[in-house]
Length: 406
Image 1 (cartoon, rainbow, N blue to C red):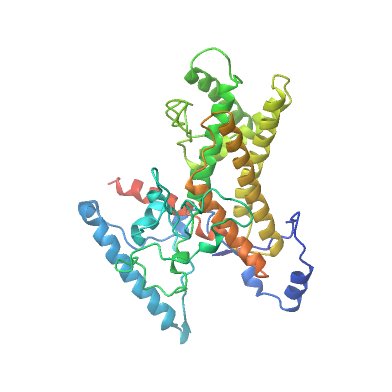
Image 2: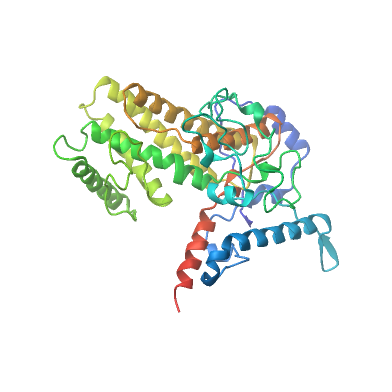
C-alpha cells in the first residue's frame, strides 16, 4: 500500500456525535503509518499488482481444475505464512489474509456456493446471498432499512456444502464466519451494478417524458440524447468509449424489460455526471409537471450522492476515522433511499424502471460492515476500497492484450 501525506480531516457527518471517540483516540493514538496507508487503486496497474499464475491458452479446457489446484496450493502457503512466518534478515515476519476479492461469478466458482445471487428463485423464494439468509419469504432481500430483517441471519449458516469446501479453505480466517473473507467488490457492485441501473432507467424515463423530442422512435430519441451527451463531454473535456445510445446498449427491447447500461465503469460514471447536469437544466425549465419536478429532484439528489460516494472511496486512505465512516454510511444510505424511492414511484406508475437487484442488497452489506465498526467504537474504520477490483481488471486486460502480440 502506498503512503500519503495527511489523512482526511474534512468529513463532517450530519448525525454523529464523536467526542468520546475523539478523546480516546487522543489518549491512545494510532500508529501514524496506519493513518496514512492508502490503497493501490491509483497509478499504473503493472507497478503495484502482480499475477502469480498465468494459464496458457492451450490448457484452457483444464482451467477449472488448474484454478482449484493453484488456489488450494496458495491457501496452504498463506496458512504457513500466518502460523510459521518467514525470516528476513534474521527477523521473523507473519502474514494474514484480510479478504478474498473478486466479482460474484469468481466468488461463486472458487467457493462452490450452494447459496448465492445466481440461485435467486423465480417461482419460489430462496436465499440469494452468501453472507445471510435474505431471499426467503420471511426475509426479503429488498429490506434496506437501518436494521433490516435479515441482519440477524448473517454468518449463521455456511453457503457451501461442507463436503465440498472452498478452494481457499486452508487460509487462516475467522472460523465463526469464514464466508466473510469473500467480500463484495465496490467496483462490480456499484459502477458495474447499481449505477448501470440508475443511469439507464433515468435516461429511458426522460425519453418517455419526451425530454429529447416527442416525435420519432425510441432509438431516434436516444440518438438525440447521445448528441447532448457528446456536447457535454466536449464542454467538460471528457472522453467516452461508447459511440451511440441504443435500446440494445441499454438492454431495453421493450417496455416490459428493466433497462441497464451495458457500458464500461468509466462510461457509467460519465453518464451519471451528465445526467446530474441535465437534471439541473430540466428543473430550471418550465416544461415539467409538478410530479415530474418532484421525481427530477430525487434524480438530481441520487445521481449527486452516487458520484460523491465513489469519490469518497477513492479520496480516502485505507483507514478512516469515525467521522469519515459516518459520512460513508450516510451517503451510501442516501443513495439506497433515493433509488428505492424512484423504484417505488416507477412501480406505482406501471413502469419497469429502477429494478432492485441482488447487487443493491450486497451494497447494503458494505454499509452495514462500516456501521458495525462504528457501533463497536472502533477508532478507525476500513475503507471498502480495499476490496475494489478495478485495478485488477485493468491488469488482466493489459495482460490479455500483451499476450496477443508476438
